[in-house]
Image 1 (cartoon, helix red, strand yellow):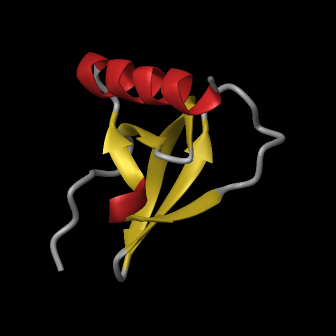
Image 2: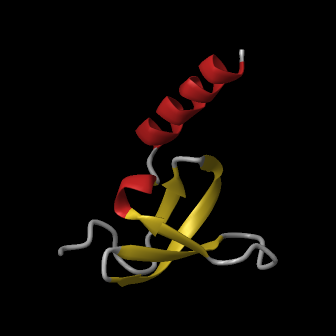
Image 3: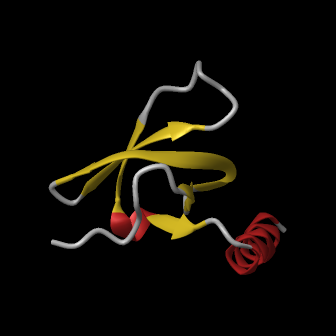
Length: 71
């Protein structure tokens, strides 16, 4: 299986797009990520389908969906 994200890359989790994550390691289809800016947050484990690239277009999309859901 080929991984979409590389170690050290910044990504967002679809369930919490307000928290930047850094890919620490990829093993057997699972991404191990650390939260940026808060070492107290435990390392997260994600499948590829749960992550999105950190770019302006994805952030704007998730922000607009969050507004729709919360209103």
